[in-house]
Length: 326
Image (cartoon, rainbow, N blue to C red; front, side, top):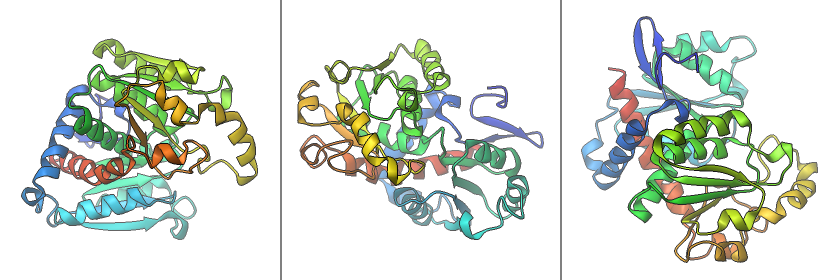
């Protein structure tokens, strides 16, 4: 990635600024550091109540959000800081003011920025110009904060990540799939992504190749499969996400359901995995679509543990990036 001087850093005004834009630009050691910090913060939150004292987080939202907004705002507040919710729909951003000018001004007011936007290129422009750490809180390419929370959850449940087998089912041309592949590769997990052999829902080669490059160094395996049962075989973790992403129009719902139904996570599919296999979904979830009710509401489901861990993982991300920018 030529726009990065070194993994995860951007040079700005002769200063190396740490960002979280894509897990592919972080190292295995950095991931482990943040996971260990998240575990410590979760266990002893009272020791971190002044981490963001007199510091402000700017939260830029172009896409709607529940977990991202609430977890980041609570994280900043519980660590002694302040969070500003900035709604792009009611702002001049992209209309009367450029991303670059917005970043340059905002970076003089706040200490750290997170952005949930449609285009990764816009988040990249923020990072290039803000002069403070920038977090990709979701774009069309990445969802790194979600995956950090997911890794934390799996670590809690399984004790170790290296060598685990995960499989992701459904629409694999999305940000969760890409960040999951990056994250799994970085911690030495094996991951199969299972989807129809249809271009629209297959992962883009760019992101598969990024993950495979990381995997060669960590010893993990990345596979794209079109057989759901094969992907589920001997899994430690089964993961799925919405079939109706924000960019999918309502009139395509029936078509999408027909295409993706063979990759629904149901009781039969879960039986192909290990008996102690965990079920994950980053939420929101539609019962009867990407998974059945008996799976998401059953004993193997840890979806609400995932959701809670957004808070703890994001506290760790905020502290880590702020520490790196001093």
